[in-house]
Length: 245
Image 1 (cartoon, rainbow, N blue to C red):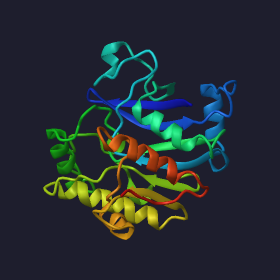
Image 2: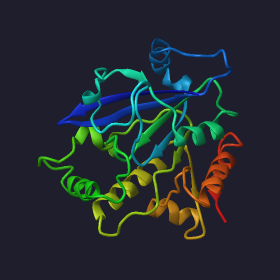
Image 3: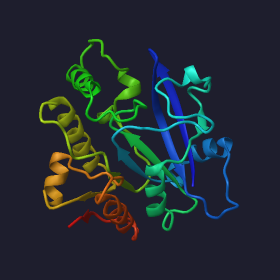
Image 4: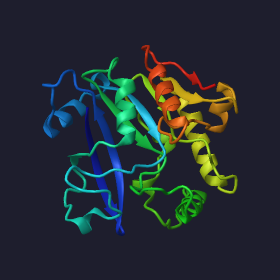
């Protein structure tokens, strides 16, 4: 597995605006940034699918997770750089590597702000306020283009979309809930295999309607169950929806 991303910054905030995982065909199969960019010119052939997560918590190789990478000496904004492996990437690699060797997987986020532990924090209140005025000309706290998805105009490559962007939305964050549901509704209209994990709290149709999508990464007793369920989703091609008991 190799991981690549592109950071952008505005007002002392860092956003991960592009993110890809490459699933190596062998130990000797390594790609460079130039190789990646050439592959992205042929996305229809090289990108197997898209995974939606909540927000990034990652860092470039050689750097630790930081709220503002420029303070750590990072100066490669708006260009692809290799990213460090983390717990989420291990789970994704374990589930995807058998069916998609030699392919890229695109990772997208509900929110691109590269910040750890944003749930629950006042940041979500700010996101909710931003989204409430997203389609207006009003100023937002976080960059409209860098932090949020332009859902009506979203472009997705590959044959599948996996939703793993969360299920615990604060009922007071009505704009965030509407945003997540709008994404689910829009992607269902595209010619993609839509995949996710859900549990006994709702059936598959309800999960799609309410944007109830379990993350592949969990802690405690749920950690192994979620990781194994993600593997089960991708044991076949096309992948399948999984219900956790």
